[in-house]
Length: 172
Image (tube, rainbow, N blue to C red; front, side, top):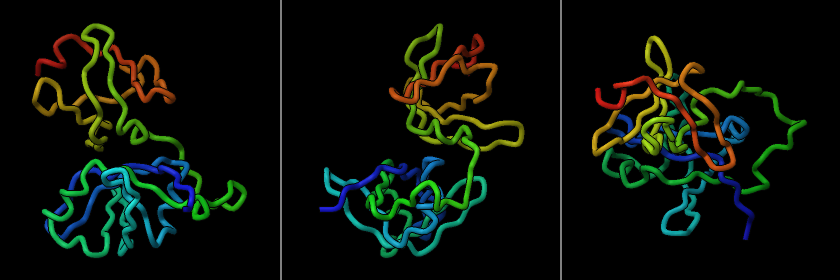
């Protein structure tokens, strides 16, 4: 069996025709764009999906073959994305260089200096003024600004974003 490399995660369904938001690690962006087949981890298995289209704007949107409705797409929400190791370009063959952005924190857990565990970042969205983390906190979805002023450290190995959030932000 081919060795698999985790390159990202599927986000929420987008629209009514089966498109999905995809969060891809910056290092694998070019590999994802070139992929004809991606693999999603479902119940411990790496299942293949053929890529029909990829669009990038404020978010990366992917259309997979045989995923033709919002209901189909919602079944794939939060699934990890994999590529076969042979589909990963060697560093010297890469032509796209992306500066790491806040999108890389998707899937990280936010730990606040005052309140402790806040929750997992479901997605990172671009707002007119800044990037925002979408987090479910106390059973409701909240937006947390992602900027250097609030981020203390980012523990990439543990996928934890240590933050010092302003008083009252979590109560909004």
